[in-house]
Structures are given as C-alpha cells and as structure tokens.
Image (tube, rainbow over the protein chains, first blue to last red):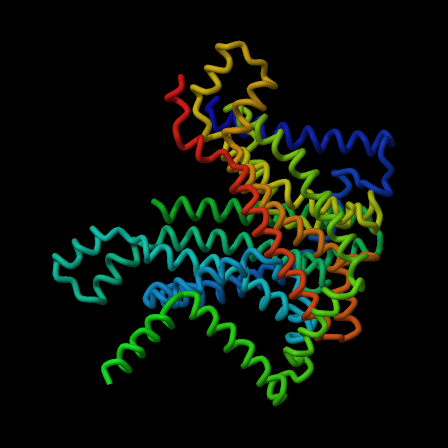
Length: 248
Length: 271
C-alpha cells in the first residue's frame, strides 16, 4: 500500500468513524432526533432533494452566483492590480486601504446591498465580489512587483517589443502568483455567497438551509448542511487540482 | 519667483505620499457621498447626510444606548476567542508535534476550514437556543481554524534540536509543550489569535443578524428593518472602528509579548 493510499485510508477512517458514532448515538437514543439527524437519514433526504426536490436548481443558482463573482473579481481585480503596480504611489496608498477593508467585517454591510440591489442574487453577487476583488488586486500587484528582473533583462537583450515582453515574459512570470490570488478569491467568494444566502435567505443552497431551519425540519437542515459542506470541499479540491496544473 | 517654484515643488512632494493620497481619497469619498445625498441623483434614501451619520455615531459613544448590545457582542466575541484558543492551540501543538498525525489531520482541518461557519448556526440554535451561547459557538468555530492552522504552521518551524535537547535533559511531554513549543511558536499563535478575532467578530455578529435578542449585529438588522439608514450606517461605522481598534491593540500587545527577538538570535548558539 502506497503512502498516499495509507493516508487517505486513515482520513476516511476518521470521517466515517465520527459519522458512525453520531449514527449510533441517534439510533440508540443517546441524542434526541429533535437535535440531531442520523447521517444516513440526512444522506437519504439529500438524495431525495436531488432527485425529486429542487436541490439541483438551488445548486445551479449558487454556482451561477459564484461564477459571476469570480468573473467580476477576475476582470476588475487583475486590471486594478495591474494599474496599482504601474502607478506606484497610488498602488502603495491603496494597498493599505484594501488590506484594512479586507480585515474589517464588511459582510455585516449586507443590508445596504439588499436595499440597493433588492432581495435577490444581485445583492449576493455584488457583496461577494468584493471578497474576491481584494485578494485578486493585492496578488496581481504583488505578482507584477515581484516578477524576476532577470527574465525581463533576458527579454530586453533579445530585443523583444513591449507587447512581446508582456505576452511572452511578464504574463507567464506572474501567472502562478495571480492564480494564488484566484484561489484565495474563490475560497472567500464561496464562503461569502453561501453565508449571505443563508443569512439574507436569498439565492440557492444557503436559502434552502435557512428555510429548513425556519421550519424546524431537522433532517433537511442536516441534509442542507451536508450538501453545503460537499460543495465547499469539492470546490477546494478542484481549486487545488487546477493550481497543480497551472504550476506545471 | 524661484522661491515660489521651490514652495510649489515642496508642496508637490508633500502631496505625493501614500498618506496624502489616502486622505485625499477619504475627502473625495465623503464629498461625493454628501453631493449624492444632497442632490438626490442616486438612491436618495440610501445616502443620508454625513453629518446625520456622525451625529448618530456620537449618540452611541456619548450615551448608554448601545451598552447592553456592546456587552452582549463582547461576551460572544470574547468567549468565542477564549474557547477557540483553548481548543485550537493544544490541538495545533498535538498535531504539529507528530509528523504522522499532521499528515493525516491537516488536510481534514484545511477542508473543514473552507466551509462557511455561519451555515452551522441552525445546528447551534437547536442545541443552544437563540441566546448568546449559539452566537458564541459560531464565533468560536470561526476563530478555531485560523488559530489551529497557524499553531500547526508555527510547529513546523520549531527546530528539532530544541526538542531533542529538552528530551535529553529529561523534560516531560507537558514541559516540552509549555517550555519549548509554546515560546517558539508564540509569534504564530498570536497571529492566529488576531486573525481568529476577526473571524469571531464576523461569525458572531453575522449570526446576530440572523436571530438574536441583543447585540450590535442584531441592532444593525433592526435599523435596516425600520429603514433607519443613517443609524444603520453609523452602527456599521462604529463596529468597523471598534474592530480596527481591537485589531491594532492586539497587534501592539502581541508585538510586546512575542519573544520573536529571542528566537531570531538562533537559540542554537546556547547549546
């Protein structure tokens, strides 16, 4: 058995071990079903929602919101990051402001976005894009700032034009760092979208969870939570895989 | 003439600093806000006068109006941070001290960290009710991950030779944890606590906006519900200022407490 397989087996054993303890606790009656749903019941409810309910449609809404946020933060973030690198004074001034904004609890301002954009996906997209924009801007600026000068000197010695230098030297040199920014942005967007959907009760998967909690449908709450966790984990897995591919 | 040129050059140099650009930006934003608010060209209800917002903010600072809500939120955030530190640091040390455990557990923690913690709130409501405890729990679970992950990151940087020396002189596992690991990872743990504090603030206050009886997040949504937009903005500003001041104070405190200077000297020279 290879080392990776052994580690995976250990991790799966921990996860299924915890699930088995919870399942036993509920089945034996140590914990009331009023508080906790058996994992198998939650999985069945999730499956029923996927097949007969509207879980797929809600997931599609959430994915659409995430995709929109990522597009906005990528287009505007990379452009802004590039401009902040080109104009050093502005870049140095705004980088601090952006970092301060990022560390403040901006998500609490969601009522403003609900008033401005209405109670719908637009409000979720507008606010969550901010969480994607800031890391993209900061990482893009940092990527251009820290591009290896030797590469640029090699390009200059080969008499490359400005366009060639940008396309063949600068872009490949900054791509991995910018991608790290995307990774961070996507993680924050995912958290923000799901969190806002739940809190404001709008949009997709988060709204489903909120509705279930409101109706005290315990099994559905756990099914929604299970689905949210799966979606988050799947996203992180895909990001990690694509980062490996980009670095190759 | 020459003097005027010198003066204008000095002024230009003064203006071309990050601080001046930041100040100018602030003035421009406030000016634009006031212009939009007064002319009503864009969402008239959404841009109350800056003066109105500041008056409302002054009311929160100078009167005991917000005291019960501040107390509720501080209790949740403080409790959350304490609980997260008590769980996150020992777990981080435990996992970080055994390479095999670290390889197994770290990816699980990393994957769990991505899940938005606010979605676990309904479970906490089921178990703990709608009082402060459920918000404290959301804040704690939000703060736990940065603290545990940064403790693990700190443990990775501890030189093996320190632990070997401690073992050679017969130190117990507890002594190794408190006298070797903790001082060596203090900087990272403090960073984790500072980041965790931000996560606890966001988690607890966001949960308050969902369902609560008191707290700053609860009041933000109350004002939103009553469409008291100026009061809502001023309360948001109040929360941002409070969070920034706490972050700054923690940074200063941890910079004083952190034994980084001693670590940087390379303790190996004493052995």
